Length: 387
Image 1: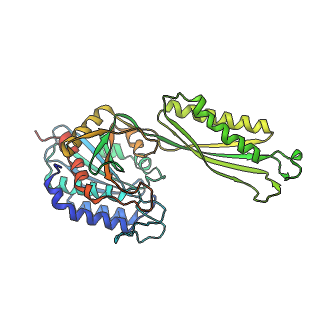
Image 2 (image 1 turned 30 degrees about the vertical axis):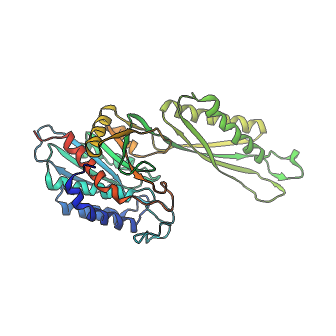
């Protein structure tokens, strides 16, 4: 596979960074050690500017090219945070922090962008400015949104932005991408049902919230099956149910349902939110109870811009020889907040035959480090060639 020779030389060093980060996972915005390590490395590499505290614990490095005749500025993003789960890999570099694990490969993403930053700072073989972005809180904390709200794009003049994620099951080193919607919007709902509790032997004196929630679970499934356009992908899942009593002879006063909605278009997102509220209120009224819905919009749809997808694909082909068409999936990714502010693309890279993401036995495949580093560097040199 034609990777840049410098990354083959740096492979052991970058692997060392990755495994060090893996041993010290940090969750959401508490990436203090990782952020400090990243900032230290960027300064050591000779970046023209290193800024910390963007989006609370985010880090940004500025690398100026040999020339700057076009004024072009490209952002390369990596996520730094881990997941709140216990590692079961048995690796010699396994997590040293109980209840925290890099089970999604963010340690690898951070190491690869660090490797690309070192190479770009050494060579400066481009015309413009490369911005390396290290983001906290991708796993449910919307760290990309926080960095954007702190003025990331405007402050550093970013015109395009790119990111990469590893994918278990895709052959090792295989790139894949698609233009348009790639990952789904991820929303959450929390439904509180209120009835009239009482003795289970006297149901006629109650408004039974267990019946209400049972009917509601089934009724909610009709939204996707009967209201949504079957051509447009959508998922609605009830994932948690609880009542105010665990006694065998009590009809509970209240009940609660929680779940998630995944969509690939704003039209579908609006429709499901509207219909969910209507169905909930209708079922509650039919049984004689009341309902309160809290609907929280999470990350938006990850939409790759057509032109930038083409650039990302050409860089992948230059590095790996090919680039497959990625399928649309229902997982969410907060890089979508950055793509709402600037055109760009999100590409995936095969992690090989490994455990799946968010699995306690997952581990990032160090073999793909030079490939990922080469793609990030190729994006900069290809989009901003020296005349």
